[in-house]
Image (cartoon, rainbow, N blue to C red; front, side, top):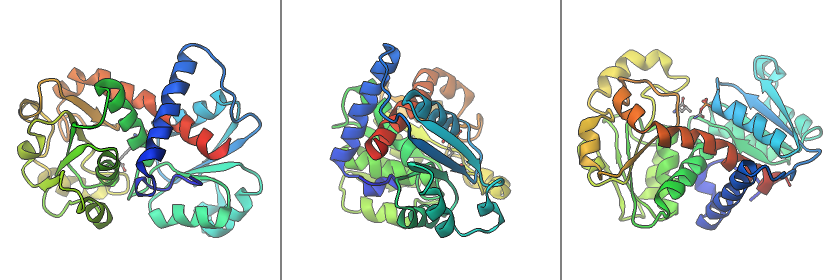
Amino acid sequence: MKHLLKVLDLDKEEIIDILNLADQLKYELKHKIPHPHLKGKSLGMIFQKASTRTRVSFEVGMHQLGGHPLFLSSSDLQIGRGEPVQDTARVLARYLDGIMIRTFEQKEVEDLAEFGGIPVINGLTDFSHPCQVLADLMTIRELKGQFEGLKMCYIGDGNNMCNSLIVGCLKVGMDVSVSCPKGYEPDAKALEFAADYTNFKITVKPPEAAAEADIVITDVWSSMGREDEAEKRRKAFAGYQVNDEIMSAAKPDAIVLHCLPAHRGEEITAKVLEEHAGEIFEEAENRLHAQKAVMVKLMA
Ligand code: CP
Ligand code: NVA
């Protein structure tokens, strides 16, 4: 594994390996056992979109590993004034040991990896959010003990989270059911991957997708960059909310995950979110541990 660009690139063993290391790093942190695997290394973090969790967890995670994180907002970089990513990559590769980037187009992340020659980590694109899905899988295994025999249901927009969850959950052996409104389906590449799996289902009826689910997941109706469609999307997504009705279709001990930020009253009710806050905020914490594992795998 040279980069973390999208979930599609990972095989099951690589995912399990990352999760095992993440569990170990979480244990070491809780027991105050130092783990300076990246002493003397630097990670540049390029952000072309806002972030709370990704920025802080990478920054703190790098610090805990003995390395140095640099926050690079695109509005301050020459990238924001049109310097091509191919040039930026070749320059940054001479100063840094790794780059994390959050941006719009998946191609930009792939180009950065191709031209830079140092490990690149996708901190979210319109297509994929691999760091989030690793944290989600870590949380599922922590709370449910295994992947086999579990059903993950995703309700809402066929966005970066939906694409990544479909691929990640199928790869580790879970059943996957997705419900998106017509016109808001997952990316064709995720559906193409899922087409080989008989344990994958997609429907326009959310209660059908949620039936007997062990894990219920949703995400915002309007992702970053789509804010101008919010009004239209609110109409299209009415009926695609994780609420009591959906939870009564799922198993009684089902957990709920949300990558956050959440919009209470849109994709999830305040009641369901608060009833499952334990899982959702453990999931947010696990971003730290999962990403530290990724950085150690790629940069140590
Ligand atoms: N879930 C997630 O990636 O959060 P941020 O946008 O706050 O980084
Ligand atoms: N789908 C959301 C995820 C935010 C972490 C977005 O891209 O804005």
